Length: 233
Ligand SMILES: [Zn+2]
Image (cartoon, rainbow, N blue to C red):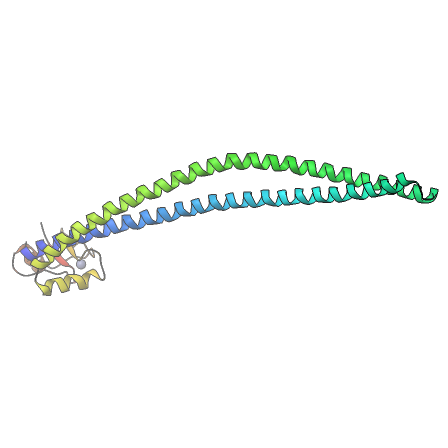
């Protein structure tokens, strides 16, 4: 095998390693993105629960204010009744108003109690959910961190291989590097083996002459069909 072809194979191996590590980094980043989405969903859920609770607390305050107003009204009616300076008809009418308002007040108080119970229930749920959510978010965050470390490791490996690649590149004639790069823009593996007379890049048979050239250490053999650089073992 031509010595330059050996070096091109080394170059190709380095490129493959770099490509594989970059793919690994891509999938790590995709995984991190997914986990960030999950954390976002947990936080969103938390916010929604919080909003629901505050809305209910506001509603409860409103009910209490309304109850106070009704109670005030009843007191006023009662004062007028106690003063006793009104006619029988007016007294009857006022008594009816008192009754009616008292009924409404009772209804309101029932509502208020139901809401308060609901609030207690929601608060309890919230506290439970909060600690669960916190555990989940912590777990997911530390997973993101450990994936970061994994990524860092891959990056430094890429750096190392890139250094080796640069050294290999320096030993190959420019003309061949250009040829390699041109082929690489179409295929990941520009240097392929001939097995049983067949180019492993395009699966077409190559000529006897090409096989002979690939065997010798003189010149560079290329596939007549796909132009890939060929070697034979
Ligand atoms: Zn071919």
